[in-house]
Length: 268
Image 1: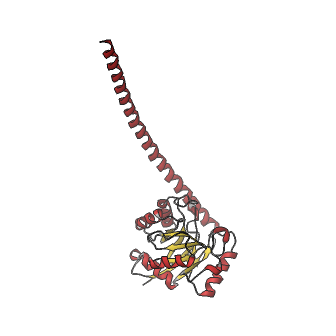
Image 2: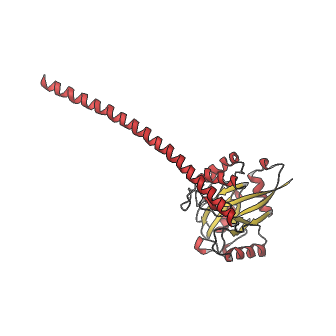
Image 3: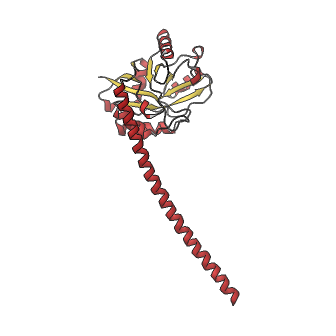
């Protein structure tokens, strides 16, 4: 049976140098707004992405790890790999590495040099092109990416490239997979569908009421998360302070006893 899935393939967490969101919060938000999956693609690190992929089924999402790796010619998304690709290697070599490790190589925000997008001349045979990136200020580079993908026959994907919670899902890829049910869909099913080009780009700006609703949901959830985190942290510090205070009191008592013993010894 053919199943259409909505997956945001390019999202950053607090593990990125320019991200700020915990993966638990991203996964919860993605599930609430109706996504079927979200791929954490932090810059040159994978710890939180691997954790997110492991936690995803708890939120009813497909778990897919990934990373945005810095190559010698620009950034490249490695979707579906479980270890870090080599950094600063040539673009074509990195693409081959990703494929050899079971993943798909996707060109993010191509041609946008201010964001380390790869130049056209340096794009080898890849698995897909990000034809819609929600973080671009104008539609020009997205249109250029779409024309490039169409001209060379590459599958196209869309992604939010979110660095903050309200942007998650602002663009996503509709991926059609063959599966018995949504619960049975695996990461490999999704990767195979991308390779085959069973993808659709969904990246129009959300209507203002919907965008406002998503923003309020995200802001409220984030506030609640950090309030809870603050309570736990405060309790931990209070416990630590109590333990430390008790230890210092005990140490002080021991020092006092030693001092008194020394005085009594000198009087004998």
